[in-house]
Image 1 (cartoon, rainbow, N blue to C red):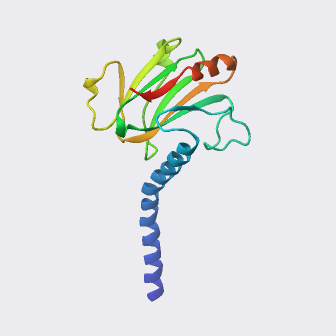
Image 2: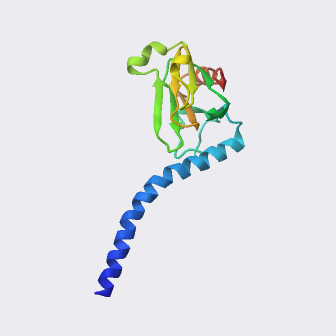
Image 3: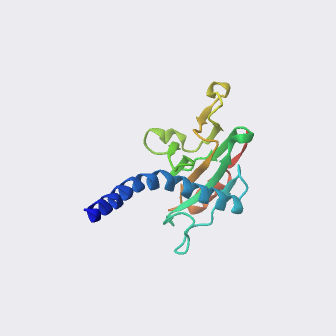
Length: 173
């Protein structure tokens, strides 16, 4: 009977532990990524990563078919203005909060095809800001800190895609 209680206790702890791990792990991953990224680049600035190869592991299995740009942000000092030129091939701007949730995004695919050839200007504001105080495209972050990821296709005219990425900007509004 004592053995059965012992096994039941272990199973109960394992069952409850998996939920605690599932809640904590995404936050821990983002904290590590946030601080590691802050060493390579200044916060609230756009960093364009070199093209991925077989040794690249900053992101889990990055695609060599994409150019990546990132802006690790902290909205404590105010909103950010993110500007990005949209090329003809695949382009994506995604926003992640500190628990790894993707809370907003835009691309030049499907119903957003009209963005091709334009300059997207997005004001990123914090959770306590009022979106009605800003004009244009406004994205409200649910957290003060997070990461914005730009992806551009490197297939075909890679030079044009890289130029579009290099013309992008992330900084105080």
